[in-house]
Length: 188
Figure 1 (cartoon, one colour):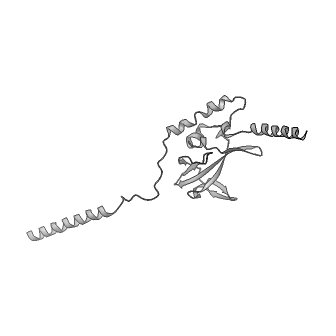
Figure 2 (figure 1 turned 60 degrees about the vertical axis):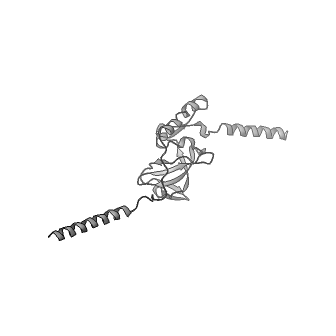
Figure 3 (figure 1 turned 180 degrees about the vertical axis):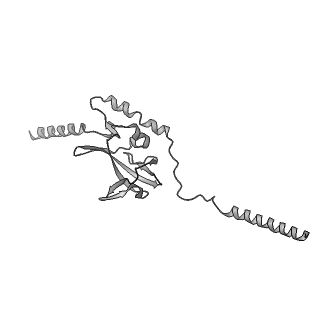
């Protein structure tokens, strides 16, 4: 009798988890995919807190520029996407360790968890139409192919940028000037 009860409880738990939303059920908005082309494959899990459902991502800051942040998204297999340039609103903040930190102040190589709410960014596909998520999720790879991946930024300046040619040109001009002054002086 106890064994039957345990099997029934286990089946009930499996049914509850089987109905929970996964990243495969997410349909991203076109604006979300246009601004972050690599994010479609980077969803780690669907998190439900109270009455709010959010998507969890992991991002690594590559570098900061004046009005943008270049990030890489972690894929479910642990690898990272090509860098994406994101444009967070001016003064946007993140909560790290209970403190508000401006996005523009995040250091390179810093990894952060990103939670995205659905407000115009994504929706969950309906469970009654299993073919719809496949058709809706199909456009996600298209922006990746259309937008070429940016080349990785070099860590140091190239060694070809040197002052030696300028000094050689200046020296040659001074020799010509000296020769011209000597020529004029001997003729007068």
